[in-house]
Image 1 (cartoon, rainbow, N blue to C red):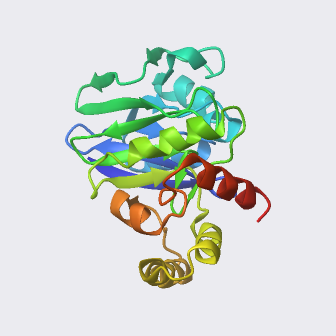
Image 2 (image 1 turned 180 degrees about the vertical axis):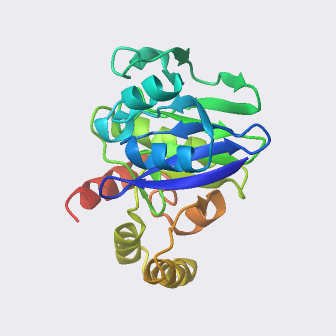
Image 3 (image 1 turned 90 degrees about the horizontal axis):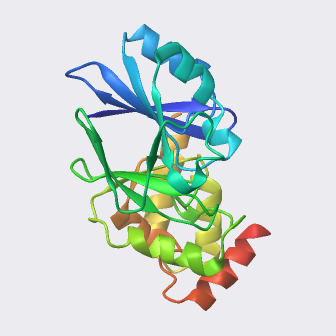
Length: 239
């Protein structure tokens, strides 16, 4: 599988998961349709599925146009079926969703929203985390609770260390400043920040990260209890 990062809107990332043998693809969280259509048509790729991690408009805004143009099926969490536009396939926590060569485990990860899920392509060691886990950060808690978000982040700690993380936004540099403020002696974090700056200076993406890097550098994954996590999440909201 090939992963193509598609920048959308101001700082969103959508992702094309491309089966190069069949020239078919899934798209994860299409916030807008035009950049995705351009890449698909330029490369003569047929879009088969639209995978939504949650219902926020900057993650589903391209659903309708993409579905109409390619007759693609929309995949989303079954308990969010009223909020995912034009949903076709409803999946549940711990379910294995499989079609053709695409195969992912569904993980329900509430906190940012109550119906947030991620798509874990375990055979490829790739996870699409939406707005729950960012590189060096985590999402704001809009609908869920601190406890839910803490438990959701802990689920990622169980994945293989070399699992690649593809998240919903390019927030890495701003997140790094917060991590450094509260973890100022972390040498691995300081090294990662140098790498982040190099990538951004060269107009490269800071994504993907890995589970290993996040365990070493992400202050939210390094929080080992709910109280500490909750305090940090509050501080980040006003950072």
